[in-house]
Amino acid sequence: MTVIEKINSAKGPLFTFELLPPLKGHSIERTYAAIDRLIEYAPAYINFTSHRNETILRERPDGLLEKRVVRLRPGTFALAAAVKYKYNILVVPHVLCGGFTKEETENVLIEMRFLGIDDVLALRGDPQKNSRTFIPEKNGHTHTYELVQQIVDMNNGKYLEDNLENADPTNFCIGVAGYPEKHFEAANRQVDMENLKRKVDAGASYIVTQMFFDNNRFCRFRDECIKIGITVPIIPGIKPISALNDIKLLPQTFHIDLPNDLFSAVQKCKNDVEAREAGIEWAVSQSRELIKMGVPGIHYYTLGRSDNIARIVKASF
Image (cartoon, rainbow, N blue to C red):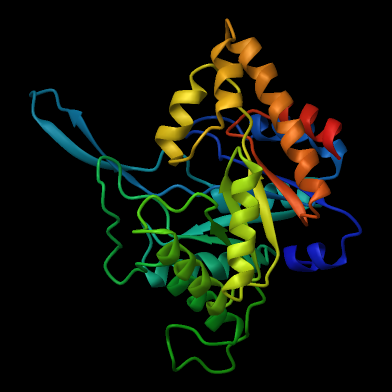
């Protein structure tokens, strides 16, 4: 069963969440511990983020700087497979444009198929660290809809080498991202919605949104999707406030707005513990309201913390 089949056959809203792979050198047991805190609430699937290589400068013994390419969180696809078979659950690894050539993307997808993984979330990915502009790899994809089209081609038995004989088609279910408050690089909302439409028209089966804190933004986004002919399921994404500094970091990092009521509530908190409680309270209220709106599910961004998500899900579903 794929994600879209789960959505279409569900009798109520689905609970799903996202995890980051462990930092290089850390154990998979940390990931298992995070899942163990949430598995009792029957998640429909788990997403795993993917991270491109980063270029860093390190000082050599002679004092000169050496440029090195590193990947701080490797192992997305092996991690997803390990979780899939340990917990008997659907997993959705992220597949990026950034940092991958078309050939590397094809090879990753072939490996995923051999591992029994048939779901992907197709994303462009962020620009290189310390760069404001996204630059694709040579012979890589510039836009997500191009990546979606490559995956659809493989589903139709079309690989990059056109002389393959009796090539087996893949069976990937493709999700893409949507932005209720507009992608920060888009010139305006209309352009952003047109970009989303291209991804869906290319073959995406569902949309998962960027985090937001104002449900009115989601309602407007959903209405705009319907207006331009996007009819695939739209799953709202939620990230609870978990520390005092989140009211500064989240808007800066993800280019989103915080409702003034939430900002004021967190600003009054004396420490991270109180801020975390305020974040849980807001996320519960937000989740309950979204469920009443008839959303197909809610996707939670854990960013490495799952105990607060457990409390939110328990109080909301």
